[in-house]
Length: 165
Image (cartoon, rainbow, N blue to C red; front, side, top):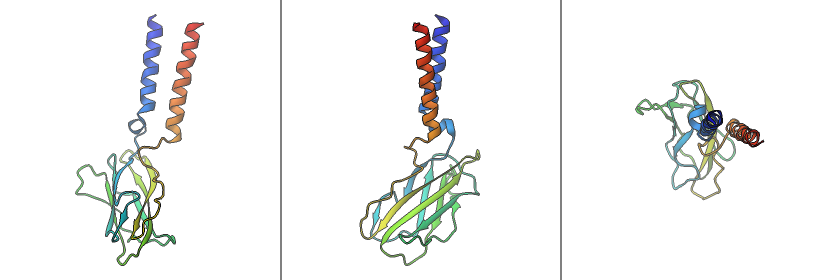
């Protein structure tokens, strides 16, 4: 009886780890952006601001902003915002004189533990358009997290079948 209970506790812990992927895998996930994904603005912003779920290294981060034709329109000055006490905010400034259209923001970050993540969002200036789906956002489950959950569930099912037999 005690052995059975201890196996259930172990499986419950594994399942809990699989269900809380952000902390288990320690990737800095995109929490918010300015402009937000899918936003329609009346005028182009001066800069892009991305806020992540954990502290980032000062080097190795990159934000690239392109127009609908694929032309890079940022100034290439991606920086960690040192005014953010959590060190989780990246910024990049944009060229002046941007016109109406859809813009794509692609990012790559490096958290202080060395893990890297990437993704993209989009926004529109002037005419409304369908936004690109955000990628790399915290609500998505990467393959490793799904596999960990599947292994935990299979293990739990196997143990339960053995106990009943």
